[in-house]
Length: 82
Image (tube, rainbow, N blue to C red; front, top):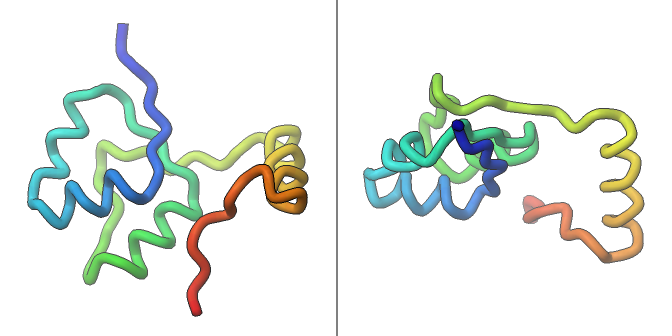
């Protein structure tokens, strides 16, 4: 059985900086939210999403929940460009 992993920016960024991001591919099927892909594009010069990373949008019901959690400070929306 293949593992399904939803990954945040941090691990991808640091593995990329170390030149070993390919190791994450061996852990399972990697999903990232569109916001993580955008943040990686701001953090890593020349970032192109890797073919083994799947960019996955939350379903409407889950998006509404996440937005509610962000508004009530239960969920961090991620870094904001300052």
